[in-house]
Length: 192
Image (cartoon, rainbow, N blue to C red):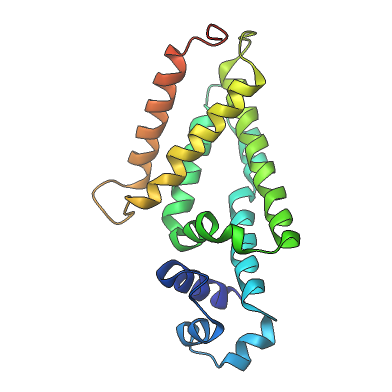
């Protein structure tokens, strides 16, 4: 199933989920269409498998890893580095999540959304911890920061080549520095 999922992600990334069909996936994995249907009942089920497995990777051992960090380490910086490394290693799956999530039926979208919410919660917790005891920071501001961070990390798929001149750790440091600098100058609670 993993092999089919990886091939499907490449196909969906290359031609788009809506344009792709099960024959395209079968050709990419060098199986018969019937072989694909042995594992999956539909193209949508393949998409769900790809996205579900990717979100499992995003969440895999994340809470444990965050708890194991030394007190002086930045959980937020760790999350950024992990996010970019994961993207660099699973570019097709990441892009498929960003582009084709809405092609899922409601029942599948809800399952993926639950995992996305868990990830958001962990990022919000890390942001809250990073901001410390600043009582002026509103929950809405923290959530907005989380979505801005996701925007920086996720939008890089439009231009970032993991095999290019900037490696994933350098990109992570750039994102972290921009976020950290912006947070340090933002007047929390000072704007209406």
